[in-house]
Image (cartoon, rainbow, N blue to C red; front, side, top):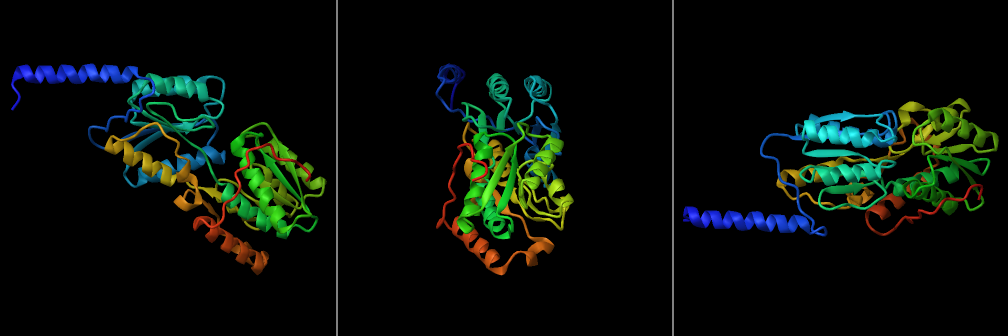
Length: 341
């Protein structure tokens, strides 16, 4: 048994060692486990939750709250003018959550700065940057696989041999979805051309709809709605469309054939387990958004199944099995996609 003097020596050594390790910038240090009770989780979203990207994260955290795993609060529509940094710092200071989830696209530097100021909070953000020691983990949607499957369907469904994609902006996480969709189209219909338009906004439904209508005027008869607003344009013209990120059949049930779906549940569950166990570290959580991990899928066809030829449905089913089974790999192409080719 330790006497008081030996206890003092041990404690002094531990404190000194901790100070040395914290000074080593390259060290990856797990965040501490919460003392008791449910984890406190805060969501910080740049866009309104009507925008599917942030809403996918929000829905997964709501599900975790409903299961009793976490206590969850959030703020949305924070924007890109510097308010994200302020909101994060205020939340971290006043409420001291165990985890902060959010979207760092357009706010990456501010998120990284606040994360460095609060090393005992797990920051888990969608980002095109890498993780930052000791406590900033990153994720992204990796739904290029179901986007490719949608392309297979689209390439077979077009009658004009012209398809349209309306997307946010030519950044890697958007480009890989558009390119995967085009890959699927070209695999089954090499003669088809795909029109690609960028609206330079993550959330501007009116602008996206306008771009979609312009593509329809140019001959596109099947559309991939990478951004909100496109499905409405397709439905108005009686054309088929594919949603994005969420199962968007409810927007236009007669016209949305299916959607590439992103499920943040596996990522949330993994992070919550790590924080509870005191093992959370800065890391790239990409794998949890892939089909093989349940982080991506193809939405049901609902009442539109009979509109898709049986041979096309069979092809999609086989390709999906091959992807999950590791027999087929969808290309990850993050270059700016061509338009009209």
